[in-house]
Structure formats: structure tokens, C-alpha cells
Image (tube, rainbow, N blue to C red):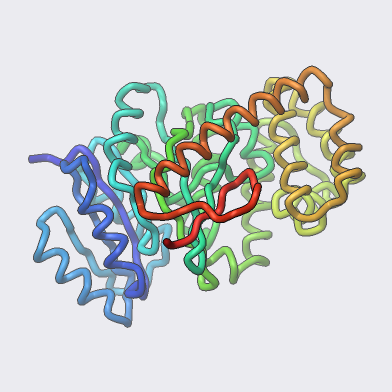
Length: 355
């Protein structure tokens, strides 16, 4: 029987979490899937683990690269080998919750105009669990605007039409931002991208991740990608704007409220023909929220918020509060089903720990 869903994974030396990741796919309530795993020249026990699983479950198909191709090329290889109507991404260190494929399949079937979707998630690091993305907007217009300032789409949570993924593919010249490049290229081509507001994945955070080891390379690649996105949809950033953008907007390493306000004014003016005003305001407000999380003084954040329309602020604060409450309620329900519990504290993003 032809699979409805092709789950694609590339792994390099992933023996630590690989078994748990694959078992989470095998334990799905939706059973008509194939798992295509590209072993990218692993030197640990990854190959043995994959061989064992492929013998136990014929839906698991392992392909071993002759040379190390890196993630984008390996994913393209998996895409080319896939036969499902949809392609679901999965990393070798994450965990699919049991209803992930069933719920994402249903969402895509009911929303045929959506080309690619992702989901809400929980992060886990050193045994501590937190909700991810609570309160954020999930609609395509918000995501298209958010791509101007951040990457709102969780890569291993992606579920997309197979024909779309085969048409676009990943840019193999990139080493750690291939997902952002693909989302922006799809957005520029008017493909509809959305997020399903259901907690369906546990996303593992650890020190060996690309995001922790290649920051300078990320700066270079992100700026190249975003410049193309800006030039296509708005207009080119000058060198001064580029320097602040990469460190003060996208990565918020050097948060500066005064420079943020200059950037916000420029963006609102430049984006007026391509984006709706409230969608740009939403994206900018998300940057300010990140500023607050980074330790920028509350008074400075409030000063910046006064530059927004009072009506927009009131509506967005109410919307976000209601949305966050719903997202967190779903996250707590999921955590309880997994045998996790909430720690004490009043953080709006609930923290969980092993019982």
C-alpha cells in the first residue's frame, strides 16, 4: 500500500537519541507512513540502530551516503525517494507525540490551500520541559510578516505537500539556515504557510546543536537570505541597517530600543504596499517581546510600545493573552498525558519537569 505520509530524517552520529526518535514515529496513531532515513556517513552506532529498525519495520527505509552530504543535500535525497502525498520532517533527536501525523494530516486535508504547515511544541533540555510558541499567531499573513524578523516555523515540525517540497527543495549551499531560506522562497512565491496550534512535538535543546556552534556563519547566511526577501517584497536594507538588523532584530544580541524604533519606522513605511499594517506591527511587537526576554529594561520596552496604535496594542494584548492561555492549557494537557508535571512559579510559558 502506498504511504500517505513520507517522514524524512537525516542523521549523523545520532546514536544517543535515535531510538527514541524512531520509536515515536512507530507509535503514531496514523499508521500509513514510510520513514526515509538518510545515514550521512555516521561513525558511531547509528548504522547498527537503523539496520535493526529496518528489519523490525518494513516501513523504515534506510539509505547510507557514500560521502557526507550535510543536512540540506541529504534531505533533498530523502525527498526524491519519498512516495507519500505529504512529507513530514523529523530530526533524530526529537520526539513525535502519538497524534502528530494524524492531526497534521487532517489539518492539511481540511486546508487544501496550505502548502506547508508546522505545529506547536515543547522544548526539553536537561530534563526540563517548556512550551514553545505560546500565544503567537498561526495564520499565513502573520508568518509571512514574521519571516521579516525571525523564523517562526519549527523545522522538525513541518508537514508539507510532497509536490511542493519536490518543486522547491533545499538550497545545498547553506549549512545551517536551509529551512529559513526555503520558507522565505516559498513565501515569495505566494505559497501558503501556516502553523497548527497543537502541541505535537518535543524539540530537544542541547549544546551540540548547530544553533549553538555556528553563530557567525548563521549571521552571514541569514543576512543573505533576508536581503533577498526584503528586496523582493520591500526594498534593500543599507549597510547600517543590515548591521543592526542581524544583531539587533533577528538575533537580538545587541538589543537597542532607539535603533529598533528607527528600524520600525523604516519597515512600516517600506512595507506598506506588500503587507497589511497590523501584520507588520505584530512582527515588530514580537521583536519587542524578545527584547523583554533578553533583559531590556521594562521602561524602555514600554517607551517603544507607545509608538504603536493604542487600539492595535489593546486588541493584540487581549488576543495574545487568550491565545497563550489556550496554548498553555493544551501544553499542560499534553504534559500530563506524558507523565510530566508543572513546576511552581508564574511564568506564562509553563515549565515542566520529570515526575
